[in-house]
Amino acid sequence: MSNAYKNFIAGQWQDAASGERFDNINPADHSDQIGTFPKSDQREVDAAVTAARQAYKSWRLTPAPVRGDFLKKVGDIMVARKEEIAKLMTREMGKVLKETRGDTQEGIDTAYYAASETRRLFSHTAPSELPNKMNISFRMPVGVAGIITPWNFPMAIPTWKIFPALACGNTVVFKPASDTPATATVLVEILAEAGIPAGVVNLVHGSGSKVGNPIVEHKDVNLISFTGSSSIGKDIQARAGAMLKRVSLELGGKNGVIIMDDADLELALDGVLWGAFGTTGQRCTATSRVILHDKIHDKFVDMLVKRAEKLKVGNGLDESIEMGPCINEGQRGVVEEYVEIGKKQGAKLVCGGKRPEGSQYAKGTFYLPTIFTEVKPMSRLEQEEIFGPVLSVIRVRNFDEAITVLNDTVYGLSSSIYTRNVNQAFKAIRDIECGITYVNGPTIGAEAHMPFGGMKETGNGHREGGWQVYEFYSETKTVYVDFSGKLQKAQIDTEQV
Ligand code: NAP
Ligand code: MG
Image (cartoon, rainbow, N blue to C red):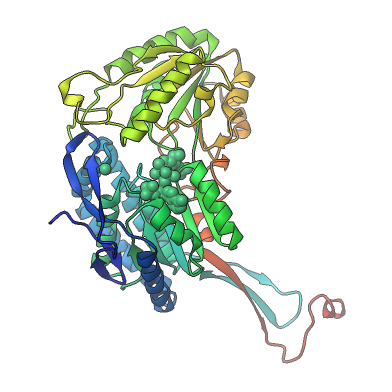
């Protein structure tokens, strides 16, 4: 079976002891099977953690710039394999090729950034309060990193976590989402091809409960980086917290874009369509709410519906397609449930609200771009993350009301404002309670070298991306070197100086 994918533990491609496998199919065409994957459990997690713990002994002592050289090679191989990876990813999870190329490019950018960062893992020195004494701080790796990722960015998100973890000298046990194990396998293949020593990165396929859970609870896993749903994130935080593990969580969103009456409406239209229906609305940063100024409300809704109705839905491998399927039947079911909730709660369905018709859609989990207007603030449609192609339009009378509506959710990931008024733009930047705010751009489009993450229930305060994530993957050691040749007491001898 050429498509029988394996785990990667201690530098070896291997099956799971259970002997069982799970399928991975194309959500745009269920007759297209990508492959089967081992159903692993505690046994493989134990083996992977043991390998990572062993490899840590020498990886932590490998000079950081040498670790960076490996990551540069990883980036080079990803460049060479970019098109192949993008095609596999589209088959595996459905988003269109343009986007899977972007997802892969984000991994490449992250590799080169991480490689250069290994020459820049700065710390502090500060003057001592005593003479002939030097105060230094520097970074140490944390140990074994447990990395658990979702399916919507199958390359970018694992690289955001694994590359900085490796750059800082940690070793990795990686459990990808069950919907996207093939892209994850290619990433690990590339890490191996770049010559990263055995045991430094280990890949364990399987379910959240049988593999994710044991990683979180393993006593030799020192930190957990998780991206996924808020409910699972909270559970992980609680369990890892009880073991005093370092945990980084990137969770859900209910991202809003404010469109003021002075906005460039054509520009806003392009941004809303891209933000709401890119990746079939299955981005943590997807635009799920448009907060529209009353004065331009009807005109903009008109423009929006006309364009949304024309979006070409289908198999993302076809370059002319603009929106792919929902990731799986369960997720499409969630979308359908929310459409019913929207109708029941009095919102007005103005676009989509059903599956596309035609035999070409029969083998996939497709759903039409869907728009509701007259959505009430605090209604379920307006408050809860749907993770699908469903956009809610909320009517507001002024700027203050727009900010209130935008902030009135438990989430705080991405946000945007379209306006030509510079004062309003800066007030929005100051007052929006989100980790990311765009001005005159859609809610999606993070760049790899900038901090990424959310406030409130979107996370637990950490950031990925950019320089900031390197803090998460390292511990600080403080060193005092006393070259006075005598006992000097801090706080006590200082008065005599
Ligand atoms: P999910 O169901 O929470 O799964 C995420 C990962 O956790 C998967 O690998 C999953 O494994 C694993 N998992 C499930 N149960 C677990 C457990 N008990 N212990 C440990 N791991 C467990 O999320 P998803 O459906 O893949 O992704 C969609 C969600 O991710 C959305 O809520 C979205 O907003 C969020 N997201 C957030 C960001 C961000 O940066 N803020 C980015 C992307 C996505 P299985 O796949 O095997 O179930
Ligand atoms: Mg799949």
